[in-house]
Amino acid sequence: MSHRVIVVGSVNVDLVVAVERLPAPGETVVGGRFERHHGGKGGNQAVAAARLGALTAFVGAIGGDAFGRDARDALAADRIDLRGLACLEEATGVALILVDANGENSIAVAGGSNVALGPEHVRGALATLQPGPGDIVLVGHEIPTPVAHEALRIGRASGATTILNPAPAGGLDASTLALADILTPNRGELATLAGLVGLPADAAPVDAAVALLDRLGLRAVLVSLGADGALLVESGQAKTISAPPVGVVDSTGAGDTLNGALAAGLAEGLPLGDAAARAVRAASLATTRAGARDGMPTIDELRAAGR
Image (cartoon, rainbow, N blue to C red; front, top):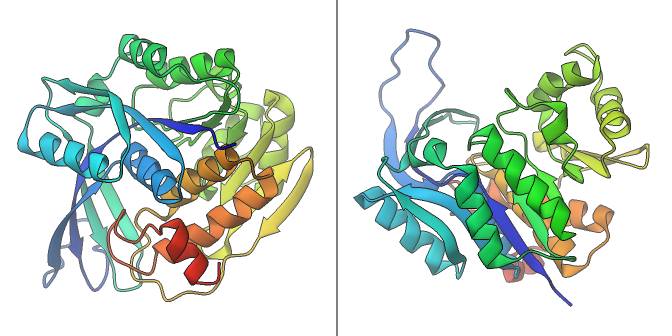
């Protein structure tokens, strides 16, 4: 039996400029190509899960502006349950993204309605959605830390499996991290979190992940390694999951695909290792097309690609 994925996080409109190379501080690089896409880590992760067949709900906030209306319509087009999506007075979040010729990116975010989201809204939304055992509550950190904490607390109390994507990692504390069953940092985020368990920022990823697992009582840590795949640490055992070789066009949204696909796999009932391996394959495939969401594969596309 498949259960639900409930994503609590941000939704943005992405304003993307593709350039030959990312500018150095104070430098202007001309000749770019502009595109507008839908984004926000929470919205992206919800879309990634829904496209892989998971029954998906999203809890977050938009503004009452044109960007917000477009953002709602885009989520609805992927058949995501939007009963938990609030419309607030603040402007819809906007991300400014630069992508170079190698697919690497640099991102700045104006949080808008995402940072105006409060714990009381999450409590109301989750009371309506009623997560339970077998459901997956996936929480991001482009929303205020108290909101992320409350979402994880309610998810844990309901018996759901809780996943925390600590992006960005700044401002998180051990009490919030410990509410996650599974933690999904990238290399940089893992280095930031290492200090919370007394390790230096340059500690080896395996050492940092094992320390977080042991000292916070987590079930698992899945570290995104980009083109190198991911590192899964579970029950003190570390395993590297290799990514298939692909022609990278745009890496924006790959981490969000990983998280959404991981949640979808767990909701489907896959063992953690299998869900993580499929998530890495989905994330790799997502980099072959431009846009945070445009490259996110459906389950049929993932199967057709032999992954």
